[in-house]
Image 1: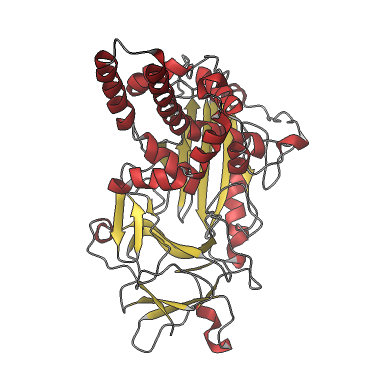
Image 2: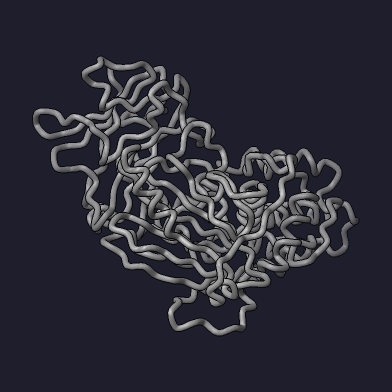
Length: 468
């Protein structure tokens, strides 16, 4: 939080020079200082609160389903994400997800990852959206592995047959991606899901059949997580964050920031008082949230990698350390992303002429011959369209992406043109059509297990041209 420390230094100098002044300028300075600290606190806490509210929404059920499951139980998606999927922004539509939220306060959890012959990767995240571990590279055939997920206070033994994944927070999120080669391949994906196991350590070691406990359902918890967080008052937001930090403590590297945030009573177990925001605090809070994405994007430009019309965020994505603005930006725009070594997510919202993508126009995404995204092992690529709200675009074909498993048609010279438009093209070209709405939209080019040529900039990304 570079701005915070610079501001504190400036305030110190100013207070010395104004030591004989009346109280009004000092009060104004204190209010400015408070609001900068509030902003820093919001940015720091946002991923934590958003993960928790995602957990609340997705564990809001009595029994497991394909969209929800009680805490410490697997959710196995059936089918790919659609325009109706609203739990996670920018959902991937060429993998089938399994996932679970873990509460490691009182138990360690055993996860059995089955043998697979396809991309199958398990991302293990802490409560702040950091990828603590990636289980299985997603590459070639992977043998069965058994893992033990433990929280920060775990003191027990680790069985010899298990690999420990030690998490720094008691709230954790595991996200399992299994690549799917279309509807005809779904049964094969389900067979992999059915072999996964997630059980408490004691139950696993007992050898007895395990019946997980039922959960609870509250209709008030049927919400879209990011929308719910944005609607929180400052008091609700920081009360939630302060409570969460008790069992999900900040790291040692966070200590300088936490010392600054203590001045407004933000920290593990602290009691926040919204009076610190001043008389017009509610309005300033809403202004801060409204400007959030643009402010964070400006702060995070050093992490952006350009690929022509496309750009993506590189390291330290998913392994954020103290880059709090970066962590918050990714949480609201693509929560639960992979490290760059596993996948990159180039985004385009303008064409090759620098004009905003809009469905009132038609576009081609052109790959030269032999220039499709290079991947390694069982890696893959896809191009997916999203509306400005970061959700999938409803269309009559229920087609949300073109990927390396799509039945597209190459041009005579071996190049590829993907047609991006709101109206259906000639029937002979529909296999290459990526439907969009008539409004502004943006594209994500996902490349899983990218070759080094992608990461070092030797590979050229496709050109997006408006059809005249």
